[in-house]
Length: 100
Image (cartoon, rainbow, N blue to C red; front, side):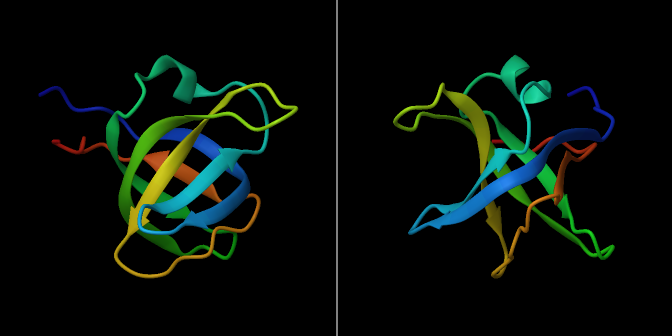
């Protein structure tokens, strides 16, 4: 499998827990590389918080539709423990792809 370089997937605009599934994060703005990835693609990711802390986890690419809004791509994230993702947190795709 070819290696990828780390890529900034999104800056968090909003995030909330989805019971039993993980943490859903939506981008702060339009565009970005998520739209080029197939839905449900599994990725190795790292959340980089404003204070400098980084937390590794996994994510899948999801399409989110809300009443009154156009559909956007977001990430359904899973971390080893509880993680808060305040607005502005960066989610990076790591060089090592998640094999799944």
